[in-house]
Length: 116
Image 1 (cartoon, rainbow, N blue to C red):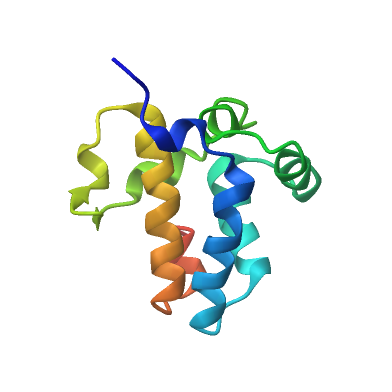
Image 2: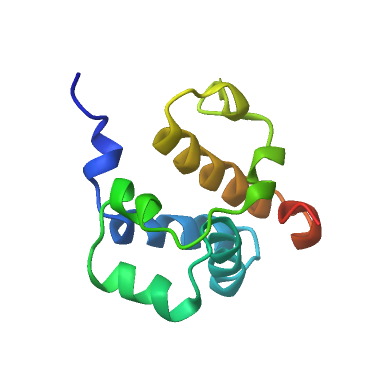
């Protein structure tokens, strides 16, 4: 079976779209970075290094220092699919991130986005 195209795309190529989506709704790059750090366990320097290296999505999540155990609390539909029902682990991580960015753009409070 061939890998989904998103796995081989560089995270850095999609990252600006996350920021644009958030900023169009009055949110900030700092909030996008906070969400990514919360989900993956990267610190800011590690996140920037991954962006600099043009790391692909599969590697980005595989090298995550500590995927947040609370990420399983993320529920809902993204691209017509319930994130909690996605069976392929890497795709589920990508969709968790998509869902969190959507919640940010919809104006949800950071405490709720970060499942605090």
